[in-house]
Image (cartoon, rainbow, N blue to C red; front, top):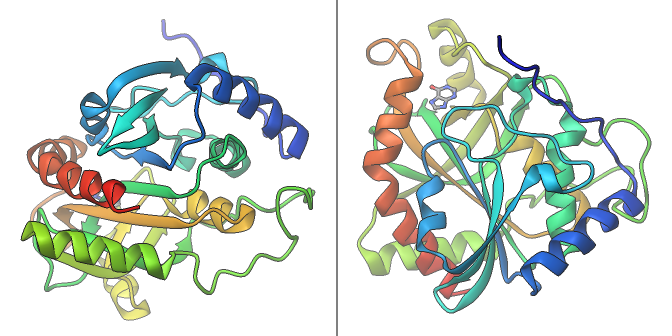
Length: 281
Ligand code: HPA
């Protein structure tokens, strides 16, 4: 019989964040130039980190544990492109049953541990008909279709304001840097709007048609809660989607295996791009 998954409570206080951040900081021994969240099938970037130090999420107070396939559930810290980086090898998803606040928590902890920028990666379905499987897309903005927001509930002003401005949640200067690095590497980098969907079922073709009308270029089941948490605590964000499949109704049937397979095939290109971006921070 499977053991039940521990879904954490959701500590939202600055004190709870700082307690976990102190332990993390002590374990890794530096303030990260960049924190990087590795999406489905993209955990391999962690293998390129020099002098890696590993810390399972389960060892930090207040952390929930990821159950999603392809998500290792640990921090990997070390050097990448001459910079100090802190990677989340595996993220938490709303569809796993984690409260939104539990998904926000690691972002707050990484900021409190001294991270200067957050790089989010994800696997996403292409909604824009001009996109192709294997494309990379810088997220310029999002549509939150997950039905919840990680900032609901009591607000600790020591973390961020009650009403959080989202006008430039995806930091323009980091997007510019991403495009410069992509150009130098000869990588085609799209830019567009990511629609966050609760999942875990994939969307219906009718939903995808509706999302396209709303202005979505890609759809996925992550990133939005982390980006909101980062905007709230003042952490600059860059987010890049790997288009692992065309969204429902646009090509064949969808499967999680296809998503992981494409992610594995294209991971090297995304990893090289992120390494270049980290080097330019
Ligand atoms: N929809 C939602 N999430 C996804 C998809 C998709 O088509 N592909 C990868 N993650």
